[in-house]
Length: 211
Image (cartoon, rainbow, N blue to C red; front, side):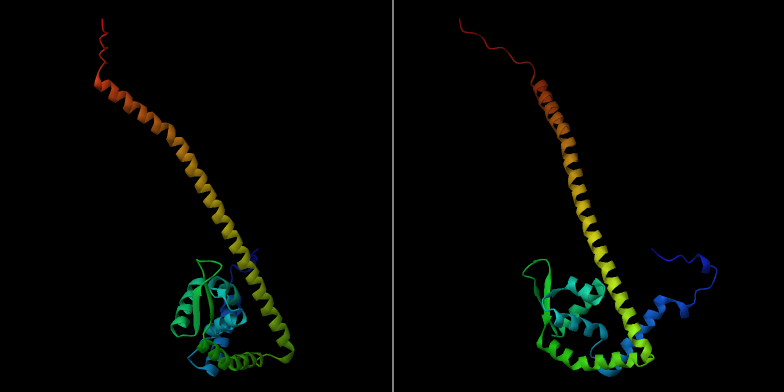
């Protein structure tokens, strides 16, 4: 449940105390540190995707969304670029014809190896900004937030699947009911057409019996 902000509603919004803004600034810091060491050839998000694929080859793009925390549309665009650059191979999943499984191409594997030491250096540079006694608790808080976010995403995905199934069942049920209600009307219309056709022919002339 969202925390009530009634006590501070009258106060002006201050970015300096905004959790979402501060997390965004921390993300910017991480990206800047990574770019300073790696250069413009690879972004921090691209590195995260390559690392996730390396850990579990054969993941689907949906799996990568959960593993990296990158939203679906952004990840789809990012994956297209990595495939075009020859860093990632993408093929139809053997278990699901509607999905694709991904793996690192040789260029992607070598790029990941070369960037890994820089990623570690970027992490160390960020932690070095904090007092040594604060680093462990900082990492613990980030890990907990990440885990809670992943659990929330999985829960939302399950609820979405349940809702989609329920809506499909309701739609099928409504279609069957509509068909059942329409059937007597169709039969009635056919009967009226037959009666009208017979009336148009006039009364039948009785056959003469042979003497």
